[in-house]
Image 1 (cartoon, one colour):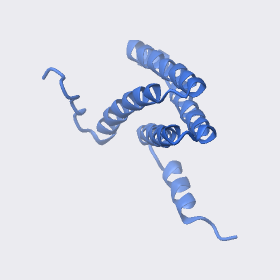
Image 2 (spheres, one colour; image 1 turned 30 degrees about the vertical axis):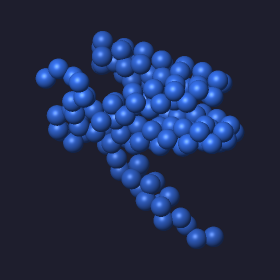
Image 3 (cartoon, helix red, strand yellow; image 1 turned 45 degrees about the horizontal axis):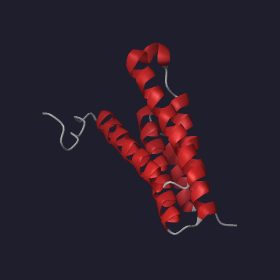
Image 4 (cartoon, one colour; image 1 turned 135 degrees about the vertical axis):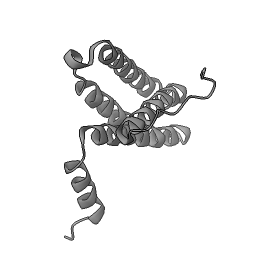
Length: 133
């Protein structure tokens, strides 16, 4: 069986990534899982939606487990609360097949992903629309 070049590339990408890059990759994976879950929910493919929601839940828990509360202080504690909120919301969305809850968490993860990307690249974080300047 021939090795999968994409899988080899992803393995190398993960093995050589910085901590910040790994966090962004986790956000990318969670957002992609939620996009697929939304599509499956819209098409009423319940088993597929559940599979993608469980994948997103696992990634959110992994992000949560990576928080260093001792070094991160109040910000880390707030981020942990947000991750746990997102996890609970995704579990509920999976049980109720609630696409609006999935979209809500998707939006939260998009915002966090954009902020992390800015930090990793050393750029200012993007402003949310409607935010005070």
